[in-house]
Structures are given as C-alpha cells and as structure tokens.
Length: 362
Image: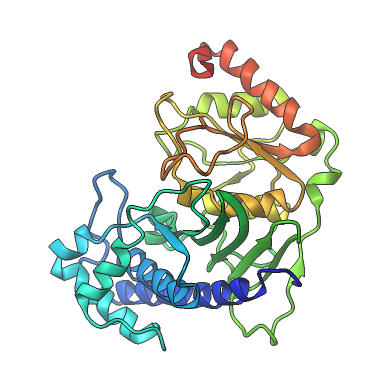
C-alpha cells in the first residue's frame, strides 16, 4: 500500500505478527500444562485476563514507543494484577524473553511500568497521535482456542487513520458464516489492515512482506443496494450486555437471515464485515448507561469504512472516539452499507418501539 503511513504500517504489521506468535505460545504452554494458573485470573469486570494480554500490551507499547516516541498510547490493561500475582508475572516475563526478539525489558518493574503507561491516557481531539490497542480481543474465546484478534489503531486528533488487526485463527479466505469455531485449517491466520482513504487489505499472518501478496478488499458494501443484500454478524445469546430480542427482531424486520456470522469479539466482527462475509451489525445495550470501550472498536471500524460501510450509534450519531476510554458520547452501534444504513437504523427504532424498549432511544 502506497500511503503517508507506510512506516507506521510496516512497524504495526511486524509487531502484530510477533504478538500473534506470543498468543500462540501462551496457548501451547497452557495446552501442555506448562504454566498452571495461566487462565485463572479474573478482572473486576469479570472478563478473564491471561498471560497473553499482559505480554502483548507490553510488547506493543514498547515497540511502537521505540519507533514513535512522541506518540501516546491507550491499552486495555493495567499492571495491578501482575504486581499482586507472582504466579501470573513469571510466565509473562518468560514469554517476552522467548518471543520479543530485539525488544528489551529490563525486569518485572519495567514491564509493569510499560503496561501502566497506556492504562490511564484518554483520547482527545487535540491530543495529536495516539495508538490504541486491545492485546487480546475475545479473551473468553481465546481461552477456548476459538476466534480472537489483536487490535492496533492509530488516531490523529481523535480520527482513525490506520488499522492493523491480526486474526491468528481466521483464514484469509474465510467465507460466511464465520463463527467462533471457524478455525483456519491451514493454521496460517490472517492480518487485515487499512489506511484512511487508501483502502483495506488482507494477507496471511505469517510471512515477510516480500514473501506474501496482500489482497485489496473490494468495496463490497458499495454494491449493496437492497435489504436483500444485507448479511448479518452478531453475538447471539452469549453476552448479557445486549438486547438479543431486538437484534433478532431487526433482522426479522429486514428479512435478513439471523444470526449469520456469530462472533463473541467485536474486533473479529469488524474484520468479517471488511472481508464481505457480513455487511451489517446492530448492537443495543440493555442499559442506557452502558458504553462501548475504545479498544474494541478504534481502528477495526476503519476496516469496514474502507470497504464502503457506514457506522453510527443507535441514535444515528457518528462514533466519537474523543469521548474517553469508554465511548460515552454514543449508545450502541448500527453498521451497514452507506446506501442502506438509514433503512437499518429505521428498523432498529421500529423494533425498539414495538418490543417496548423505546426508553433506550432517549
């Protein structure tokens, strides 16, 4: 890809490959029972935390910080659990020593400090360049050796300009329906990446840039002109945060097969929308005070926008990535091809009213 962000893209793709290698090593160690307790820890929000989450966040922050020292960083994890849990810290140190290559960490305090350096920063329209990443999106499915992703985004003044998403278990040739257990039989996985205004691409996860040929993803969403062209991706009956009856009701209202692609992690959902395996998603939270988290969406959304998609919240508002680590300026998501977005949005509103959930539109 010829773009003003060529170096950023090269660094981000390379570190995403290393991060994916770390994730696979952690899974292999757990499979061999070489690191008892690896998957025991549970955060305050009840989502599991793994060795891979901490090791990858440290790797991404240090690598991108070395390459772009004037940039800021936002990541999901803080190092509090590591400092309190020696059983967890030891394998984090070990996998970084094994896999991080030229990226050096002095000791445990250095790793914890690097992780914490991106645990408090908040995005701001005047903050310049900020990298946002989710070291493991879909931790619950990662533990089950199902679909997960590593998400890397670059924001400038709160605007997505670059996305790199590594999907270690997703085939570069995956076709619908893609589900959490749609594991690439070749074991190669894929990387998807995009630069604003320069399109979205996919390539096998493994291999040096001169060894693999990236494929530009077609602007498939531009060709969807009728509700009959809509293909859904959702997370059906697995998360307590969403209103399943509304998600299903919208699909029925539009006569769209449901659930279609069915994935727990948000980043894999955006990824399959970029590939064309789906081109529509709706998410309504059960409570009006529930908000999305920036690392689950920043960058990954750009992949779908670069193939002709449009993304707003349930009220039709543009997603505001400057609102904070939680996207408190928006409620839920409605994503669809640009020419059909208004139809999907209207179906969301009609379904909320007909199902007695109109208070969620306030």
